[in-house]
Structures are given as structure tokens and as C-alpha cells.
Image (cartoon, one colour):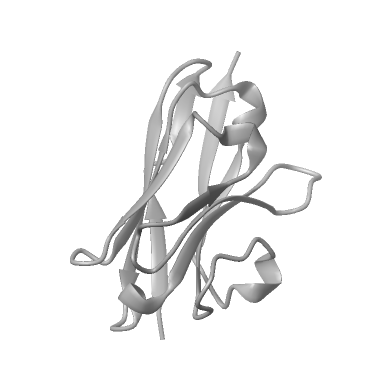
Length: 124
């Protein structure tokens, strides 16, 4: 069983940066594919970025490529999302998630562990 706790959200001006962290408890973290999703008001939850359990493969939604970077530190049971050049359209609640699948998937229904979410607000 894996429990996830996000931190690092907040209010930032357009063009600014934030770094989200997701601390995991449980011994299986290093074997899980990890991902960040986000959900804006009135919209469906959206895949943002995913990283393999080894950390050597990452996928991103097109709208954040070149601006966001996902990484993980299995020794610290933590996954990160570095967000640069933030835009107002990045405003959402960001969720950390984990999947026991062996490859990165983009569907939220395939992730069986979720954090409580952290709010990111980007002002124009």
C-alpha cells in the first residue's frame, strides 16, 4: 500500500516557477510508475507528466513540454514536478498518483494511488 502527500503548491505570477513534491509511504514506491495529473474547475482530470519506476523514461502532455520536468528520488520515496514559465492556464489542483503497471499510462483510471492534491494558481 502506498500513501501519497503533495506539497509545494501556491500562488505565482505568470512566468514564475514552482516545484511540487510528492512524498510516498510504503515499501513499493520504487516499483511504481508515478505521475502528476491536474484538474481545473469544470474540467476533467488531465495527465500532465509520468515517470517510469527507474526514472529513465518520462512522458508529458504537449502543453507542458519544455516547461515542466518530472523526476523521482527512490531513496527518498519522493517524486517532483518542476514547473517553469508558468501560465494562467496551468492553474489547477495538481495530484500525485502511482500505478503498479510496468509502463507509463495516461489514463487516470489506471492509477490506484492518489494524493489529496495541491492548488497551483498562476496570475496574469
